[in-house]
Length: 312
Length: 314
Image 1 (cartoon, chains in turn cyan, green):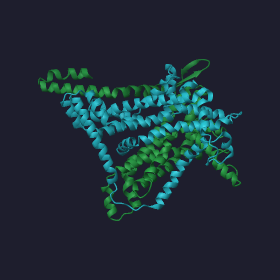
Image 2: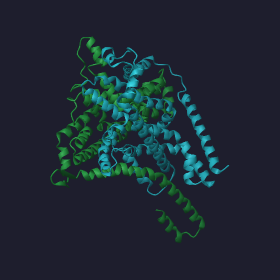
Image 3: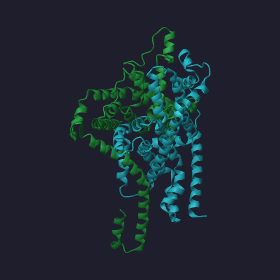
Image 4: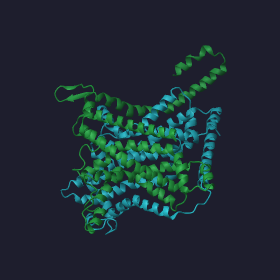
């Protein structure tokens, strides 16, 4: 068994321990059973209603024909037309919705994996190494958190137009890769998640620095990385401003720009009212992947956010 | 960097042990820079260079006749006296002063309620309040736009069946509040999760003693929990300030529903967009983007300063 193998075994063991500790911490946090406040519960459930009713409306409206949309009450079902609507969405304009969905997925996944990896590597280096220029580089990163992304979009467009990068996939992916907040979050996360003694032990065994990062640290950093990944995924999937100005060709549009295009056609009138049920069903389809991703990866993003929110 | 390290210790350190240490140190520097570099290359290429380029563009003017020439501060003076830009900034300031406190207060209240351990269905509530964050701004605006709408929006349907006209959601007076509602709906959950995460990490010894002494839950929340999550609150406020001044998606889409209410300069970002793409004036658009960035930095800085002063006072 090589030293690196042994290290990665230790890493996975301590990862399991961490997970166990997380589990154990949950119930132990409020030892004294407190009485349920029904007033609070009822108030909270009413508030929950405010957040869920629009989504409920979206589901209901997706099941209606365009005529029923106008003639029946919005918050309850009429004739069930969901599958018909989905077929219309997927086949309308030669199935352009499907290419938009594929584009959204490419933009979001490539950007998110890239952003998570860059943030994890940089955050780990800031947390675990001393090197000349570290303080200055980290200060620049912190300052950059305050640079407003959308105020940067028009300048980025002007530069990319000059470089001939507009209307390409890179025009969306490149600006989504650098997330200073991700670096900050990963630094905070790495400081706790990777035991410096573990790194020292690997060094003594003669494991190279980068090898330590890839075989030992990366695994321990995973929950934090998944947090950055998820939030970059959402940011890119949901982005509208950047693709709107960067892209001219409809076949490169992501879902957000495509749906907005349909909406402006529908609102333009001239017999295009039949589009409303198509836009509504398309909107529903476009949010399903992210909602599922968030629900399934809950454990990761919640523990990752915990470390970021606490130590700022 | 490595040449410096190579050259310096050779004559002064005769001991081999010392130079082995330096070699290890050098390997660590090398690894650290290798890990940090990819991020900084992308960061410089996509954040710093565009800013510098926009700064450069903003100092020039382009005329159909005469081409490009140096303009000095002309674009900035024009922006600072441009009623369209200023009214957009003022509208966002109003938006900020009303919407952000409501959003943060509700996010804080929900987070405290979830943390109190005094409610049923806490887990379900937490997820349900957070879910809108995963909905794209475009979809949130389309959805609320339809809900507000006079044709098949349920509010209009209810109001009509009671014999009233459609509610004034999309009118001159109502629009700003309608957009505030969309932003609240989308981001209360996100802010709640950040505050909730901070609340969960307060050591319980901090308030077990207060509880034993008979302090009520609201009292504990006010005097112990809220001060303890101050840094997280500051973070949410600053992110909200940045987000507010950049508002673009919501007004851009609302424009298709109410073209007479939302003009080309409803928000500063919308204005910069229209100057760049409709008027084709890259120089002036660059100056507007730059000024907007400066406004945002100043306001975030003021927020931080006031919060630090309060902390010193208390």
